[in-house]
Length: 106
Image (cartoon, rainbow, N blue to C red; front, side):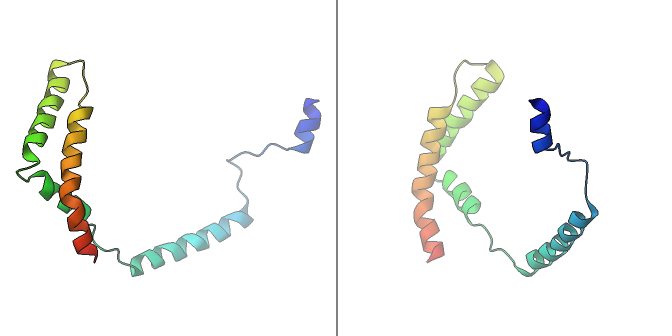
């Protein structure tokens, strides 16, 4: 039974490369970098906006709580995670950042 399967589906190994297949791949690789060099991607404004929002008066206390929780877990080995603190901080940052995204996109 096994010989029937191996006859029907021959083994193929990744190390074996055919010269015919290698040439088209090289041509595609040469074309791709040229196309990438021509197009410039616009600057991503999201990290900059989120960092600024994280420093606002509304979000700073939440950032402080998150940093304190992270410190406790890393240094003291506290048996907790900082999911709740992270959630509250990211919610505050998103509340501040979303209107700014739309104003920059429009």
